[in-house]
Image 1 (cartoon, rainbow, N blue to C red):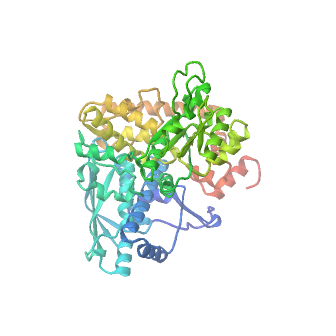
Image 2 (image 1 turned 45 degrees about the vertical axis):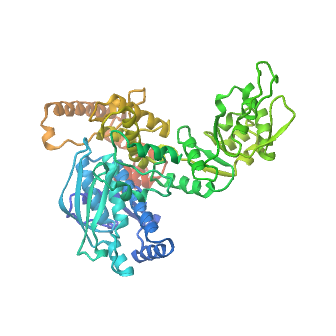
Image 3 (image 1 turned 180 degrees about the horizontal axis):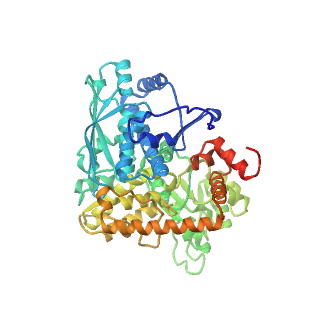
Length: 576
């Protein structure tokens, strides 16, 4: 949109959030795009989505469709929360006010607060009570199916859960107590923390894309013995997530679980490859058969064959007795080969033969033994690149690459962090016999902003450390989490309220911040030499940040594309 063009869309400023939203909602018809917080949006026909909803209900059933649409709304809420944080860096009260207004702008519902939303970012206390008027979902459901026995604002409930969970850094649950689809005059929802919901498992069931996925739950000081027994007997590890990347892995896991196909898990260290392998085994036909896990990188090269395939007495110095290898021990069950790329070439050749023939030959023996083993392998590197580099056999790669599953790193599914934190806090509070209130807002922001080189394993370790260091009945804070050498991420500070601004310590901090800002501005002006030089530096920086895309660079600077091009040509000495 150039400066000479009228705005394609203008929010009527009857809400204080509208000015900020208008800055970040952009219609770019020449590019075929609508952007909100730099995320692609679609202006689509409501009746088309209504027809899709109706068809899914008829094909999948009411319960499955409700879970699907609630999960979709949850992901939208998390994404809007992320976009708002990235664009505005707003304090919590301001950010919370954006959620209802965003959904109004998106055309889903009109929000009317029954009681002012109440929350405490430090303690985790939360309460929300809203009327929903003109709900698209409720009106659509009633028109298509008549009066319903259950609430029908599925996407809206999911959106509210996702938005507030991402903002608070801990699970917040919303329930619809009245709905137009049920014959009520208007819809009504109530939101509260998971700790206050006795039926949290049922309300959060939409997060379970499959039965073997774990839902967040209320934290207790000590688990009931029956719960411990049930968890141990199931053999299922905790698999927690709601992101699109997590759900894609779970769907593929379910598809392959009932087969005997070889599975290859790919992903960075710490993403949970062994955890997913254990879930694969637990929901498959070999659940009651042996499970043997081998870390190929931890076995000395000269002992790899003996460890995997077994050894006969006297085969080499020190082999004082015959010993079965990992394949024989896993007979009938599942063998997990972690860090498969670490196998030396001679062992790769023998492994290929075992996979092809289904039989092993112990070191120092001439007899072959039949084995029936399901192979699950994992690698934290690009195996195709290893093949090209000559470090991994191509024929073995194709034998293993029957059903590859790529597990995304945690930094690409940050919306799973609050759910994982909930599970880990409960786990280690129970293990160490402590009562932990939760995470401070500052700690939640730090976890969200951190880059996670160690992925889920690193997150679990940090939460365990935090539970150990925190006091009973207290929150885990950043000094408890980031005390193992991790580099604290740079975070934008929240804007203090009017009362806090009067505090002497806050005033001192504000003064120090202004001093720093003045110093940096002086350095910038000295470097650039003039106002025009500063402008040139800013434009060059914006272009680098946007990869050379002029439209994106203009957005970073709050300019229209035409304004940006005019200034750039002026700097280059060209006629405007």
